Amino acid sequence: MKLWGGRFTKQTNRLVEEYTASIPFDQKLFEEDIRGSLAHVRMLGECGIIRPGEAKKISEGLKTIREKIRAGKVEFSVSHEDIHMNIEKLLIEEIGPTGGKLHTGRSRNDQVALDMHLYVRARTLDLVKALTALQEVLVEKAEEHVDTILPGYTHLQRAQPVRLAHHLLAYVDMFGRDAERLKDSYKRVNTMPLGAGAIAGTTFPIRRERVAEELGFDRLYDNSMDAVSDRDYLVEFLSAASLIMVHLSRLSEELILWSSEEFGYVELDDAFCTGSSMMPQKKNPDVPELIRGKTGRVMGHWVSLMTTLKALPLTYNKDMQEDKEGVFDSVETLKGALALTAPMVAGMKVNGEKMRRNAEEGFSNATDLADYLVTKGLPFREAHEVVGRLVLTCLHEGKSLTDLTLEEYREACPLVEEDVYEKLKVENVADARNAGSGTARSRVLEVLKKKKIELD
Ligand code: ARG
Image (tube, rainbow, N blue to C red; front, side, top):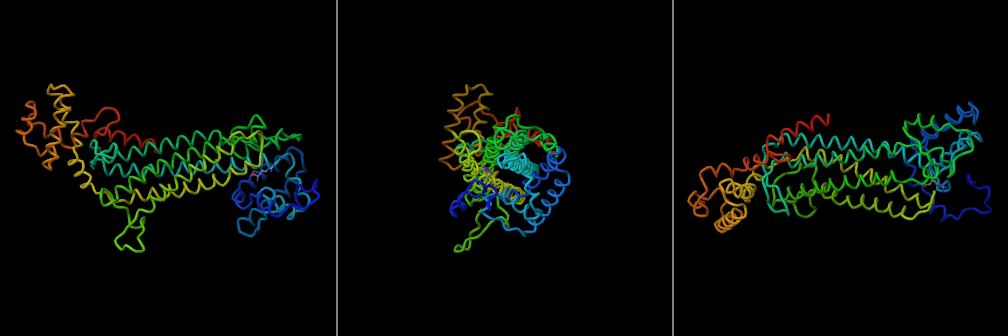
C-alpha cells in the first residue's frame, strides 16, 4: 500500500515505479532526512500539534531506524519511491500508526528542500577546509622555493623569469577566492525552507523558528512558494565547484607538462603515478590527468541543473528530482581531487637547476636588456629593435644574452657598459619587479607572510 494510495484504484506500473523513484540515489540523504524529522517532530510536540508522548515515540522510532540504516540493516524499496517515504514507511512498521503523525504540517516538497540544504551546508564547510589544507601545502612548497627561478610563460613561450614561489602563490590566491565564494554561498544555503508545506504553507500552528534554531539555520524563507522552488543554492554550489575544478585542472595540466621529459621541472612521487602494461619505462601522471578529465563532469552537472530549471514553472515539479545526482557526484569528485592534489604537490620533487637553465637560456631577460638601454637614454622602440636583433644573433650562434661580449654589445649599441651582465642575471631580473604584485624576492616574502597570517 502506497502512503498516497487513497485516491488510486490500480497498482502503479512497475516500470513507472522504477522510473520515478529516487531512492537508489537519495538514500544518501538519510542522515539529513532523519535529523530534519527529529527537529520537526519535537516542535510538533512542543506546540501541542501532537501529544508529547507521541512525539517521544516517533523520535525514538526514528533513532532506531537511523541505527539500522547506519548498520546496513535496512533494505530500501523503489515502491516507496524516495528516502522520505521509505523512512516514513519504516517508522510506521516500527512504532505503528503513531508514525503516521510525523508528516503533520509538512510536505515532501519542503522536506526534500530541507534535506538538500542540510546536505550542501555541511559539504560546503568540508570543501572550505579541504581548500585551506591545499593552500597550506602550496604555501609550504612556496616557502621552500623562494629562490628557485623558472621561466614564466605566456603563450607557453618563455616570457620572464619568475620565482617558483610566485608561481605557486598564484594558485594559493585562486583557491582563496574559491573558498570565499563557498563561504558567501553559505549565507544562502543556511536558510530553512521547512514550513512551506507543499506550496502555500500549513494550517497547523507550527513554530518553524524552533526548528530552524535546532538545526542551526540562521534565516527562514519568507515565501513558501520560493522555499519549495528554490534551487539557486545548488546552482551556486555547482558553479563554485566547477570553478574549483577548473583551477585544479590548470594546476594539474602544469604538473603534467612539468613532469614530462621535455620540461623535466618536477618529478611526481611514485606513490601518485601509475605504470604502463606494455611499456616498462613509463611512469604516468594519471592523477592530475584524471582531475583534468573530471573537470568536465562537474561543469556538466552545473549546465545540467541550469537547463533543468530554465523555464520551469513554479513551484515543485518532478523535474527537480534531477538536482541530486549531479550535486552528489560533484561533492565526491571534488573531495577526491582536493584530497589528492595536496599530497601530490607536497611530495613532488622540484628540479630547480633545469628550471633555472631554461630561464637563463630562454631570453627571458630580453625585456630587461631593452629597459636597460632605455635607462641609458635610448627610446624604448629603438631599444626593442636593438635587443630583437641581438636575440637573433644569439639564436644563430646558440648563445644566450649573457654570453655576448661587451664588444658585441657595443657594436649593437654603444650605450652598453660592463654593468649589463649584473642586470641580466635571472635573480636580478626577477628582483627588479619589486613594485605591486611582482615576483621580486622582497615582494614574494611579504606575500608569503601575509598568506600565512590569512590561513591561520
Ligand atoms: N524525491 C523527490 C525529489 O527528490 C522528493 C519530493 C517529491 N515531491 C513530490 N510531490 N513528488 O524531488
